[in-house]
Image (cartoon, rainbow, N blue to C red; front, top):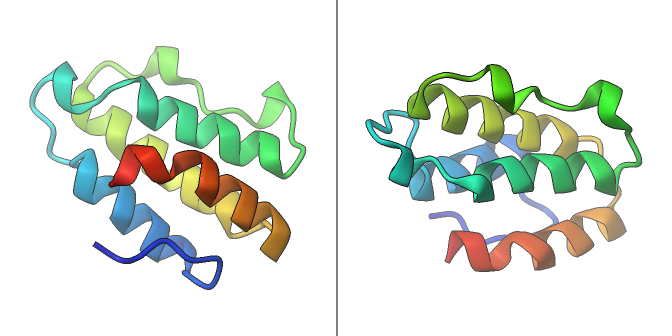
Length: 97
């Protein structure tokens, strides 16, 4: 896994999330609320409201849950300043170690 750093790319973050919560998840124990939370916290960190949120209620399979969640967290991460990245990574670090 890539070490968490404010200098990491959005793709690095996506890979770190998918290393812990696999894109080929076959059961819901592999696709948990942490993925949704990481996406939501990234969105909130850059100040976007619910209109920009990923609709996790529409996702019906654990593999899509992880893939879509990791993608949205990475997309929001790419828009963060260094300070926002620092705050965000401190918040999610426990989920990815």
